[in-house]
Amino acid sequence: MLPQTPHAAYIHIPFCRRRCFYCDFPISVLGETRRGENSGSVADYVGLLTQEIQATPILGGPLQTVFFGGGTPSLLSVAQVGHILETLRDRFGLHPSVEISMEMDPGTFDITHLQGYVAQGVNRVSLGVQSFQNAALEACGRFHRVVDVERAVADLQTAGVVNWSLDLISGLPHQTLADWAQNLERAIALDPTHLSVYDLTVEPQTPFGRTYQPGIAPLPNDETTLTMLRRAQQTLTAAGYDHYEISNYAKPGYQCQHNRIYWENRSHYGFGMGATSYTHWQRFSRPRTRREYAAWVQHYVKTHGQLDCPTTPRTERVLDGLITGLRLKEGVSLAPVQALGRLDDTVSVLQPHIDNGLAILTRSATAPHLRLTDPDGFFLSNTVIVSLFEVLDDEP
Image (cartoon, rainbow, N blue to C red):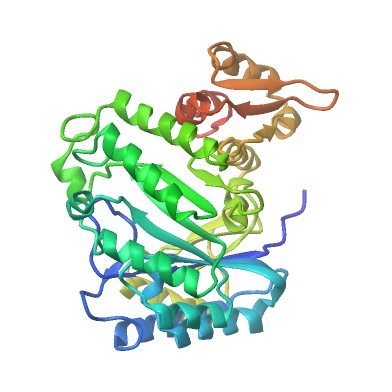
């Protein structure tokens, strides 16, 4: 099988006002006043980023999706966003209908910034709301408050941004089912075309990881967090949102096309500190600190875009495809497993999950098709994935 041609690019912008207490992403804290217009650190980073893009071999094009993630990309100036997009256009080309997404935090941009981003080509916004309770935002170390959310949504409407998503986090400290119901109601009232609902993950090296134990008060217990996720599924689907991926809901025509690249395990470019690319069956992650990333870019430019990384083994590619594909509502074909000669063993370990209602196996003349049930199969997906590892993980 020939490697896929990448038609997507992820751009990592690592700067934030402050580090949220649950965050373990590769970021740099700027403080309350610095942003792209007045920060030498941001300007230097954008220079490194564009050097990396210019040095990257052209494996295909044009780009059909671009995603500015972070960090807080809305701390960039309009000119910096335009410069990055122009560099991508010059190097790979941008498809006429390219989806250009930008993660934006309330309180980090105004209507002038937003209109400028749109003028540069940004046509999809992911708004990091997380909660509609100020106490919860403060407990998480978030920079913004609810009034900033309301102002940001008003700016989106003024700027004519129709394709926008809203993020929520369940399972936060002291969060009750009533709090969660209010979050869902207020989110729906704002009428985004897409919603992402994430269950809190307590990472060990974060302030939350040093303070809290998962499932132990003041964090909600496992039964309560599962109830929150089920309530999100019931409330959002009743409001017309399709639960098309474990953590994501969309109105018709508004699924995130860039993120589907990951869930379908397709080839993509990654640019910037800590970003991961997947090209020529090679998965490569860049350094997670700015100093190491700067040194890596200089080496990368000198070697004309050569990456020193092994090709992903076929069995690992199949396992990756199953793990990511099962996140989608439609599930995955088991044809790749069948081609490996491991179909019978795989179906055998899946049978208990089929019997208890977590998964559905549909047989056909060519190859079986596997999908998880909604909501319980989605929300308990790790139990199914562990079974797949038992059969397909070739690591000793």
